[in-house]
Image (cartoon, rainbow, N blue to C red; front, side):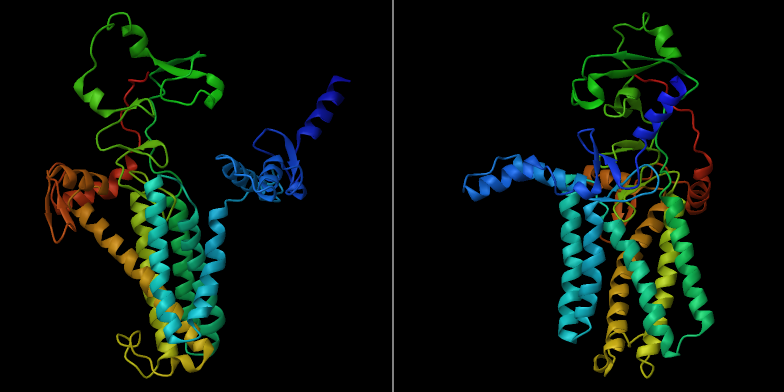
Length: 420
């Protein structure tokens, strides 16, 4: 009887593909997305009665909407859909097809689109919030350009199977390198051999929300701390430990590690937080990040050259992007030409990023270290800040690149055991 009862309980707890657990911990269904919404009813009632809305009413409605927009999933119930991935899927095809109608529209769209992306970047960067908008824009741009290359450029007969295979291989290699980059940047973790026990206190920490973790405070004790706690009472910590101490992650950071306020973790040899991958670039994924940029740029440049040779065969490849007479007489050619311009803009931005990364690696400087050194005026800069040399970790050009190419194999350095 107990086995049958346990089995029926497990079946009840198992979620089907359209069920999910909402933000209140209750079981719900995707079909009930517009049902029983007290926050929305209250907001509508106040609007109809012409009463002022409560300061938190709109944020509650936004939370309810974002929580109820789900995608049916076969394993583990319906998955939550981030709303920031939707705008690129709609705006990019619409704007590119609109720009293909006339060259003046193309000029307006291709000027306004980068401006909107930069505005959204600075807005989210100032708020220190995570968003999937840029990753969605990057992946969908790559997929949509490849789709148009197959459906619009390849049927014209100017591109052979070999060229198509090269472009396809470049897209696949770019995605594989991106997947490897997304795995882990090298998060600073405590030394598990030194960890002795975990003590739970039911008092909220001073710098955290009491509602987080149900008011518990998990404190990890190490062997060194446990044995020396009575002897070291009243002893001030070392200056290096105090300087490298992260109050958020509760860990002493190794040299060159940094805390990312967007991801909320400390990363080994933190370079920067990249919005295009929605993650940090650190010791574990810096090489694959550069490899992703190289694969993308080579594929993009080769694809752009094939498109321009197809739509502007009479013009030189270097001048076809600026002067291509009669390209807007046919909609298909205009769409290909507009996509070539859009790809050139994206390629130019990522090429600048790759150049900065190569220069920083050559001087053994991370972007975070260069930014701090420029702010504190402790580095030598040249070419309008493009080259920054702190002179701290540099071992020469060859030694710097040798260290960069082998730093991913040293992901288990002696972690500090000074945990509180």
